[in-house]
Structures are given as C-alpha cells and as structure tokens.
Length: 183
Length: 276
Figure 1 (tube, rainbow over the protein chains, first blue to last red):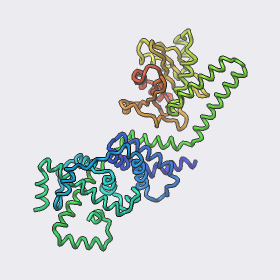
Figure 2: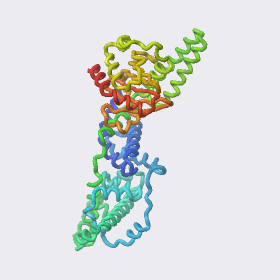
Figure 3: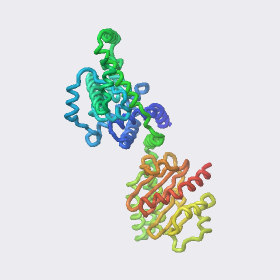
Figure 4: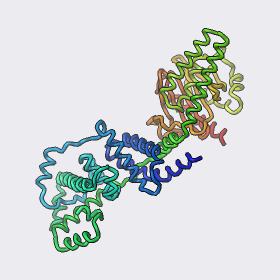
C-alpha cells in the first residue's frame, strides 16, 4: 500500500532527528513536558505535509522549520520573554575588550545563561552553535534574511558571553580566567 | 569574525582574516575567546534528551495519524448503521418504550464516547452498554456458570480478578458479549460505592492508546497504563500485542487505577500466553 510506504520513508527520514528537535524545543519553551507536546505536534504536522517535502532535500532543516513555526504559534502565551534587566544592560555597555571565557562553568550554568537570553537571539545561537546549521539553513528555518541571522547570532553570543561573565564574576573566577587569556 | 568561526566566509576572505589574526594580538585573543565559547556551548547543548517512551509516543502518534482515514470512518459508519438498524427494528416491533430507552441509551453512550479518544471508546461503550444499562442478573450466576460463560481461554480471569479486588466487591458478571458487532470478554464487579468492569477485546489493526495521556506515576510500570475520564466514569487501560484491556468504573480515578494496577500483571501474562 502506498500509504505505508510513505510512512516507512517518513520514519526513516524524520525519526532520527527527534532528539535534536526535542532539545531545541526544550530550550525554546523552557519546559520539558511542553516541549514534548510541541515536538509531537511537529511530527504530526510534518507527516501531514510529508507529500510536499521533496525527497533528498534537508529533512532536518525542514523539521526545524516546522518546530519554529509551532513554537512561534504558541509564543505569545507560552514563551518566556526574559526582560533585560538594568544591571545586564549596564554590564553589557561597560564591558571593554574581550570578555573572559569562564571555563570553570558547568554545562548547567551555560544552558541556564542560554535560556535567559531573549528568544530571537537564543533561537539563532541554538541553531548555529548547538545544531550546527549553516547561516543559510537558519535563515530558511526562521524565515528571516541571512543578514538578520548574522546580526542576531553576533548579538546572541555577546549576550550569552556577558551573562556567563557575570556568573563567573559572582564566583570570583573571572579574573583568573581573564589573566589566563590576557597576559 | 563570527562568520569566520562558523566557516561561513569565502575562501579568499578566510585567508584575509587569517593573515590579520597573525599580526593582531587583540583580534587573535578575541577569536580564541569566541571559538572557545562556541565550543563550550556546543558541548553543553548537544545532549541526549529523548527517552525511549517519548520516541514510541511520537512514532505511534504518527502511525495513528497515518492510518487510512476511511478505516475510522468505516467503523463509525458501521456503528451508525448498526444503531439505526437497532432503532429501526425496535420501531417495527412498535415497542414504544423500548425504542426510546434504546435510543436514549445509545445517545448517552455516543455523547460520552465523543469525549474520550477513539481507542478508549471501545471499552467504555461495552461497560456502559452491558454493565450499566443491561444490569447484571438478579441471581448472580454460580462460579461454575461464570467459568463456563468465560470459556476455557479466559476462565483464569476469575481468580485473577477475585484476588486483585477488595472483599467488598462481588463479581456479578463474567461472560463474553457483543456490542456494536465487536466481541468482548467482560467481568463486572459491584461494590457498595459503585460498579466496575474489566473489559478485554481483541485489538484491530491500528488501534492503540497513543494519543491518550499516560498516567505519570505509572508511565514506567509494566504494562504502561493509560487513563481517561468522562462523565462519572474513570477509565484505565493497557494494551498487549493483540488485546486491549480496560478497567472502567464510577469509583473515581484513584480507586480505578489502583484496581487495574492490582490485576494488570497477571492479566497481561494470561493474554501473552494466549497470544503466543
């Protein structure tokens, strides 16, 4: 039957990306259970429009495009929009030269700093730094021009770095790291 | 510089950047810092998150969606025809009161069925039709009669159910029955506070509890129990390779899941024996 053949092809192409889609959904929604619901919806929508998906093109990027469509759809009620606090802006404006890379930070601290940057920057950092998409793919996934991807990435990485610096400073380890980097 | 790190520059531009970096210490430091951050974020973020349960959940949801729509329509139309047929026969017999009660029963079953998922409906319908509406016999059949009515394959359900439920519950029905053309194995219990049914039916192709919510505490139990509730009825269920098993009662969600949990393992074993 043609239907089961298409299903097999879908499972073969789409299921291997489940983990990547889920972890990005979790970082975008900030909630594991909600992320699972969104990802199930992504896969159902993907299946429904699978006939429009061209074989041989990038299935992973296509799934991420659907993911961000779904996330965007729920954004107003669901997504956390962290507000830039005055202190963050102050730190950002007053940082001079290359900020240190706090190597002693844990994965958890890095991820929670990532979670705290505004969604549009977080999305680009997730897609480029973690999911390793090209700028062109990210532009396609998010439906924005490539220049916007580049500026959001630059801004997102800077925000992330600043936040990590302030976390590190609170431990008093930033200076050591800075000395290490800038003798 | 970000584009350089991400390998997004043209080869010529890459060479220019490289040459500049060799001569400019601040830029080299900045490049190192950015590359280190990118690598650190990559390492922290590339985690394995998917549980086997979630993978199965998505796979089954897609498979259910992929099931040809006509099969669901087909079942619904058969059910509609059956319901119309029953109503028609009753009208032709001109048993006025029966006609109306039968119609209102069907209307009730269909109205509550619409509020639970397709696979849950199957067991709910039989419980409401057979245990709630048809009532159990006034004279509770003897154990021998029940064993006989269940048939050799399912007779072991009697001791399983008996041992699993508290003493205040009496087994009032144990038989095989038909509802809307489907075959069920049915054990009904009555206690002071309500009526409960264990309903087992053979699984047709594509039927699965996918879209229902797993009871969180029991997601890792074996078998995994599914849960739904509608009107005053609480439903829990699980599936084996070839069977769907339901426990339905008006005893509340907590009591309902406790009772099915108490008998799930031996029931599953019995069904697996039959399936092998």
